[in-house]
Image (cartoon, rainbow, N blue to C red; front, side):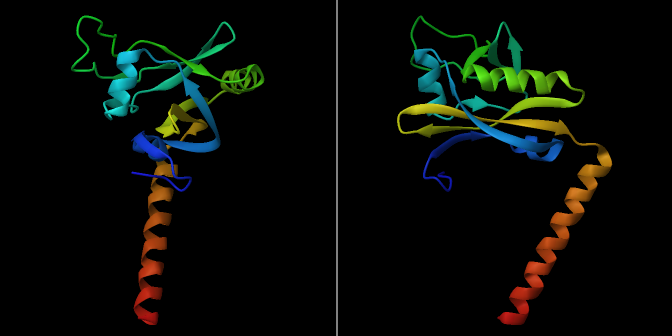
Length: 155
């Protein structure tokens, strides 16, 4: 599957758009082992429980599951290990200060190929409450019904 910019999307976090209000998006590189690269290119990655943590002036992707590569041999990686995100120092400091505020978190939205590089789209987000989720669903339903009505009248 390709996105608008022509990048090949390897995995998406569909749950994120339902549970969080996306405030800001960023692109980050990710430090992977050789077997992890092979597994990610095969689409064996799950972002559902993933989030970004900050420690020591660095950003890490935590809770992201990359299944072991089948043909790896003896060097098998830990599926749930912390993976370093490659961001500029200013971006890390700004995101870390925002996360210190109440209710903000940084979550992965998608993993994709940008040329030969594997990139992660991360987002600064705020958790939605139940009434916000209902409002989003209601708005989406109304938009869909309006589009169908327009299509019926013009067709």
